[in-house]
Image 1 (cartoon, rainbow, N blue to C red):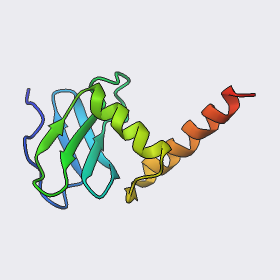
Image 2 (image 1 turned 180 degrees about the vertical axis):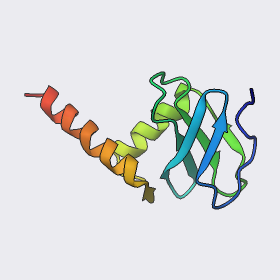
Image 3 (image 1 turned 90 degrees about the horizontal axis):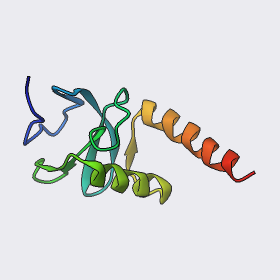
Image 4 (image 1 turned 135 degrees about the horizontal axis):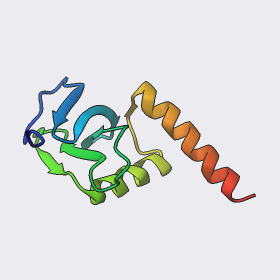
Length: 99
């Protein structure tokens, strides 16, 4: 078993740890978020890397919450095709819950 890499390569599309595979899902001007779409636990479903140093910044629920705020406030510069679909469905659920 292995832990999350402390650093990533600039064009890296996925990373693996003992919790599974994480895919490059969301980017902002400062951060890259890798998402494990099969992980249901908010504490371990997202890993956040600094876009300049490429160093792991966070791998717990704080980066999950930060990513949700990025999505809600449309602060992203990149969304993977899978994340675009997930965002669309998530926003639909939010809209449906108000009616």
